[in-house]
Length: 251
Ligand SMILES: C[S@@+](CC[C@H](N)C(=O)[O-])C[C@H]1O[C@@H](n2cnc3c(N)ncnc32)[C@H](O)[C@@H]1O
Image (tube, rainbow, N blue to C red):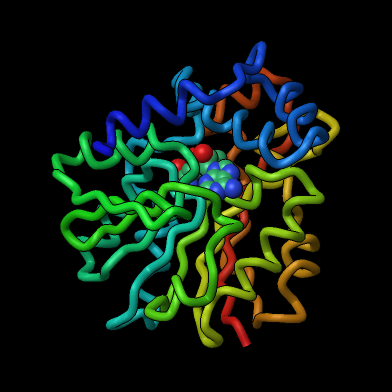
């Protein structure tokens, strides 16, 4: 099946949410895995992708040189159509991403001028071009066998996309599938959760430490006040917004 046809098939099977709003997300997560996935598929369909950055993430540029990722594959969980994957490829690394939305995957390759090869192993639809391999499907279906070449991870806006009960499951699964010694550059945001319902959800420094402490060395590289640069959060009444950048090394 061609990729566009496969996109159409997946979308025709979706049950539409009344509105892709945070409240809908919370309702969806309460109803279980299927509905939660529909929330993200719907956001991509409606182009409600305020999380997507048109520029390379400045923390990635700044901190990536400290990573010892030579020779290995770089994994980008919940990758969306992040341009950071193009930048990582330009640094000479092969890139592996996982993303639920077929539209995101399709747009990533189209917008960056790549013509990908498509295969389907039942769990994932795999699209690959120019050393970038995107697995279209559920992160939680990944196994250690998918990760054997991975030496480093770039994790931006994944934890903050998930409600609290799923963050623990996410962190445990990530640790379980990655080889020991893998380094993770982790970018999260923190704000008073009572001032806004997520996503993005607030993730504190303490929560990151609690999630990963048993499994990794954790270093907080930077804690930046970014409220002034984010007017859309200011208009939602937020009084504080921090971006936290961590480096983790799995034991
Ligand atoms: C907040 S966005 C971040 C995207 C990307 N990391 C970036 O920096 O632009 C979260 C992404 O995770 C995807 N996603 C959500 N749940 C997923 C899952 N279980 N497996 C794979 N992707 C998922 C969504 O479709 C969405 O594109």
